[in-house]
Image (cartoon, rainbow, N blue to C red):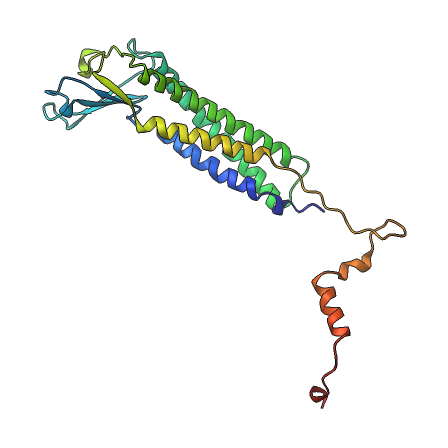
Length: 241
């Protein structure tokens, strides 16, 4: 009999890491600080700092109606750069694929713990690990693409209602990109842990004469040691009296 529950410690850790990484992937798509822009216009933009994310651009202002002004960036807007448009699509794909990967990995771990094999546990782990790697790819491609755009100081032709110039004085990589890189690395490690699963194989003890299972060996182990110690022990005469 193969003891499946004793062979999925790494896979359970991979499931936990994958779930945490999926939460980070879902969160990073909604943050506003993928890019940090520094502009000269400090009359409207307080401090001259703006944050450009995947779905919107934001800045603080003491002149306009609200303290924090955010403008939405649409997929079909003419000013949307290709790296941001790709991030909007790939981040949504990563979230959906990550959900399927979590469900499949949880199903495989559950079957392994309860000993429900049926020959599909190994396949389920491989599929879940592959989906985690696909999620990491969909997450890391837009992250590194936007990071290269920041390092190259590429421009964005924002419309006038954004109050942002097309070219900033300088721009920096925001925490959103760092979180995305960390989530992608965790997804890769999680997929590797799941795909390293091996079905355990244990052999029954065989007798030397006929090669069949020796039932007398069932008493070996801790109970055999106890029996042997009792048989070889010395009777306490005081206790008998």
